Image 1: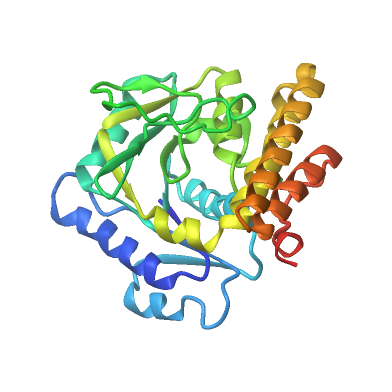
Image 2: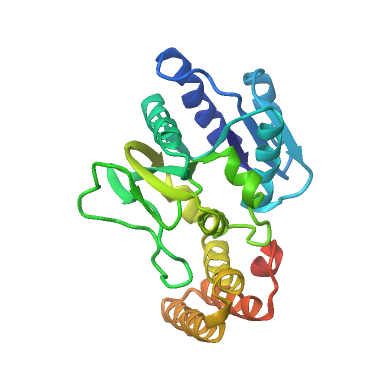
Length: 292
């Protein structure tokens, strides 16, 4: 499994403790864990090395984003012979029975390539999978009553996802041009094109602390969420590119106006930059551009 750390060693330590508890249940064994430190500020994750000597830590001297950081761990896991890779956010948690259910679903059909859980925050189901990011601004599916059996989705969230080895062998790693957001939608779309389904298993539940991530990365989230729609359209909906580009440019303008009306110029600027960079094809990591 792969856990990404970026300036949040305490969150990563909490996540690691929950993962190591799986072994005590007898439901699943203790996994091989790769923690990728994504260019964190000093002191980084030195304390994690001491507290979790069995965890394999991969340091990156720079922040490679969600896609690039996870790719380091994915590459290491596959080189070590893993048949499947579990991606887990360091501010999320899964219990052993959820992991066992996801692995069971993944193995039940050779056509299933990616499996995710339902995602919960403060006792409320906030997502049961994602839908096409070229068409929808609100992509997280949020039914009133979560389904009781596994079902297909357009994509599985990177918050927690089990991905079959054969998917990476067929379509390659996460696309690092996305940097932060949209890369799992892209991976699942590429997998779909070669015959792999993406599935949510409602027997599995992940708990995700959305408060911290939204607070820490609000402007970045707005920027990448908008900009990466243009990348997804460029790659997967090129035949209707003009129509989709116009729609997302209008969406960015509305987001900027609404943010200015609420006295949030940082959010407005992020929305405008997202559309400009998307149209011009400026992808990859742009954190400093958004923050400057």
